[in-house]
Structures are given as C-alpha cells and as structure tokens.
Amino acid sequence: MAINRVAILGRGAVGLLYGTIAEKNLGPGAVEFVMDDVRYARHAGEMPTVNGEPCRVPTIPASEATPVDLVILAIKAPGLPVALDTMERLVGPRTAVASLINGVTSEERVAERFGWERTVLSVAQGMDAVFLGTDMTYTHPGEVRLGPAPGTAPGVVDAVADLYERAGIPHVVEADIRRRMWVKLMLNVGINQTCMVYGGTYGSASEPGSEQNRCFVAAMREALAVARAEGVDVTEADLAQMARLIASLDPAGMPSMAQDRLNQKPTEVEEFAGTICRLAGRHGLLVPTNQWLYQRIRELENGFAAKGTHREIV
Image (tube, rainbow, N blue to C red; front, side, top):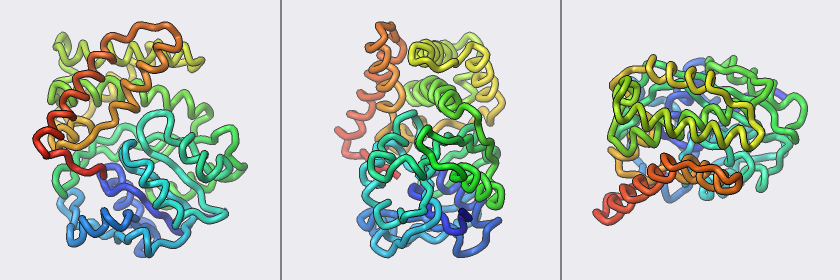
C-alpha cells in the first residue's frame, strides 16, 4: 500500500505544522485541508501563515472531497463528531486514518464508524506551535509516535510511516503505542490544563517552587496513578522526562489550551481531566487536582459563552 494523497482535517496549529512540512517535501497536490462546508464558507478568504510565510496547502469543502490514501485528524476533540461526518467523503476501502487528537479515546470513535483495520494509533508530541488569529509560529516541530491497534491490518503502520518519512514529518514507530499515548495524556493533563487555568506558559509552569509547577506535577502524578490502575506501565521516570521536555521548550510558548483561553474557544478538558476523573472513580482513586482543574476550566469556558465570545472549534 503506497500513500500518495493525504487529507488533513483541522487547520489549527498541528494541522498547519505538519501540513506545510509535508507540502514542501511532497509537492503540490499531495496534501489538502478539508473542512465541512459551513466552516469552509466561514473561513473563505482567510490566508493563514506559518512562521510568517503564507500556507500553500489548499483547503477544499467536504462537498468537493474525494477518497484519499490517508486522513490525518488534527482537530480538537470537541470537533470529532463533525469530522467523522466529513470523513465519509474521504474514506475509501484502502484509506488509512491517523488521529493526532489529544487523549486516548478518539481512535475508538473513529473505528466505530470506519473499522479498526486501517486505523493507526498515534500521538503528536514535543512541538511548540502557537496559533493566534491566523498566524502560526513554531521552532520545534516535535514528532509523531505511531503504532498498530490490535485490529490494525498488517502493513498499514509501515505505509503511514513511509509517508511521514517522505513528507519530512519526524516520527517514531512504537512497540507499545498505548503506553506512549498515556504518557502524552499525562503530560497534557498537567501542562495544558495548568497553563489554561493560570494563563501560563511553558516557562512559568516549569519554574521550580512555583504554584504553577506544583499544579503541573500534581496533575501529572494523578494521571500516572490512573494509568497504572488501567494496566499501563507509566512511571515516575516518564513524568520526569515530560517535565524536562517542557522545560526545554521556548519559555514564552504555550500549549493549545492556553491558546484556547486567549482565543476563547472550547477546550479539550473532557479528554484530559474528564478522562482522569472518570477512570479514577472506577478504580477508587482520589484525584483532587484534576477535579479542581476540571471545575475551574468549565467556569472559564462558561465565562466565554456568557460574554458571547465562544468561538468555533478548529
């Protein structure tokens, strides 16, 4: 199976990051953004930039889409129901699907609609992309970690990895992708939610002894405990590695949920604290930091809605 045509759903930070990298290496016609028709009409005429350069990847409405070799989901989790409908025009008998949506549940929802055979488990990590307005900037492209689900057909992961190689997208094929996804969830539970609630940055969340750093680490440690209760071998060494990763990023940079606060958009709190609190209840674990973060983030989101500034999900 050779992958030559790629459709990306989600023209936010992650989609723009990997879409523009792929376009530079694969050439015109290989990559396109696809939007549902309502969103496409709303964004008509917009020209996003990446590190100051206009994005050259074309955007088409779903009504004009045809099946491709690979669909990459680079949306926010709340937008998945609409994205699944959009994918109906893109997924053919041999189309592979790779979700870069945060959390550990999106692939299950994709497979419910399109089957596990061509669904690849994956996670994007380590990038420092910031997307405000129509301008995206980054210095670290991060990498995609990927691997098969139990039901993924042989050769599908290799085909996706080959596409990433040709596209210049940094990637690693994982022997235990589920564990890697939980490590990333642990990181997101800490850094995304802390920076959203405090209006913080990578630098402020990494400052030793600060309230933000305490919250960042405490939220991660609760996620670690839940992962282990779920049978996933996440360790303190993983937690320390993730903390070092954040400390290595641009201190003025910020994760996606902090950007959601600035853009006053719905967040992925349900995928983060929502998942941790739900699973903690199943295992009889206490997760007070995540319970507080969940409540506080919902309060902030409700404030956006009350002011009439709640914006759409990209």
